[in-house]
Image (cartoon, rainbow, N blue to C red; front, side, top):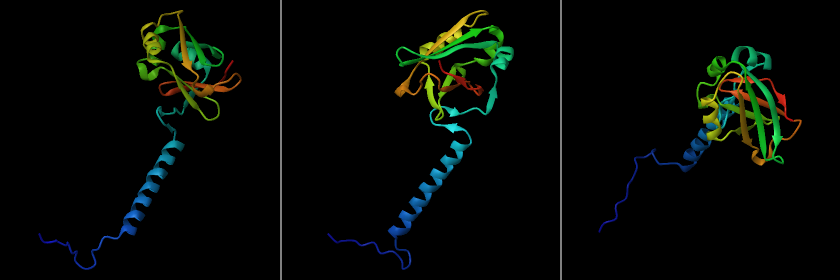
Length: 165
C-alpha cells in the first residue's frame, strides 16, 4: 500500500488562524443581530413584545374586557388574573386564538408568565356577556411579588402596567 499525500498548490494552504478568525467574526455578527432584535422588542420564547400600549379604559371601550384583579396568591406560587367580559363580541375580536391569550410581563426585567394551555382553551370557548374569566399563572421562580408592576398583553396589544396585589 502506498501512502498518498495531498499536496495543495502553492499559496492555497489551509490556515487555521483565518478559519478561527472567521468563526469569531461570524459569532460576533450573530450576537450583534440578536442585540438589535432584543432592543427592537423581540423577547425569547414570546415573539415580539408589543409597542401598542392601551389604557384600561380603552380595553373596556374597544375590546369589552375589564381587568378586575391581578394578584399573587397560593402563598406566592401563583398569579391570579381576573377579567370581566363586558361585551363578548368585542372581546372575541381581541381573543381570536390561543396566541392572543393574556401573557404577563412581571417587574422591571419583564419576566414572562404564561397560563397553562387548558386554561387558554376554556378562555377562548367561554366568552359571554357579563361572564368572568379566571386565569392562573405559575409564578415561576417567584418572579412576581405584591406591589410589583405587571403588564398584561393580549397578542400584539398590551395594557399599561398594573400593580400586583
